[in-house]
Length: 354
Image (tube, rainbow, N blue to C red; front, top):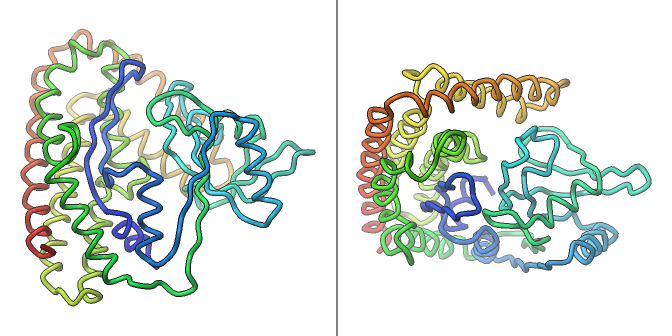
């Protein structure tokens, strides 16, 4: 099954604006509002499979369970805090515990863990790195040594029903979210929050707000534009399976919404601010180097980190010294444009599957 079909079956799209006092800057997400493990379990169930979650606060028990799965010949889909994975070359405070990797081997004598991440090639970390990444307690979304065990049928079953159910769930989550930080209401609330960022965040943390917007929309494993082009391709693929050609026009609306998401990302780190525009270009290039995993990728990423550190210091000073009104007003307007695009797309999808 295509990656686009899996995205759609899991519940597709959503929105979340999440901030806790322990976090240096807010998280902005564009995938289904379900918790990550719920997303995966629903995806499996809608194709006739099954998923079950192992979770423990004990790093020792978590590692023992992972080792037992490997001994049984099962690759392990596990949750990790990205800040503890050296190959990502991230700052030490870049905590995000809802990241997932597949561990497919451990050589304890050589202190080497073999795993697969978003890059094209295999990757390795030490056993201690893996334990730290799995048992991290940092927000947002501490991983708690979670492992998702999956059972996939030889042939997908009841996919048509699963597709329709997933589309309805997507619409419900966006139109009737459980709290105001989620869904369409969350996008509108985000727009209203942006002008107040300088009072809530200063210096590096304000820079982190802008940087996170770009990362989580364009390069944080979304395929770009907050999953919207992927979801549009899912709708085109699904239209024939559920015998609903009108989904093609809905896909066009999500393509347009994807462009609005990119407008937001670029408004957060615009070229009109030399330091912010440079940071955006460097982060995009660094992500490409990671995904391609050519020889010398890690060394190149570390070089770019040094450049990003210099840019970050300059940008933080500029954010304290310059008038932010124009920057934040433009970002706010782009988010409101996004809200209007998302509302059109979700409304059209809801009408086609109601």
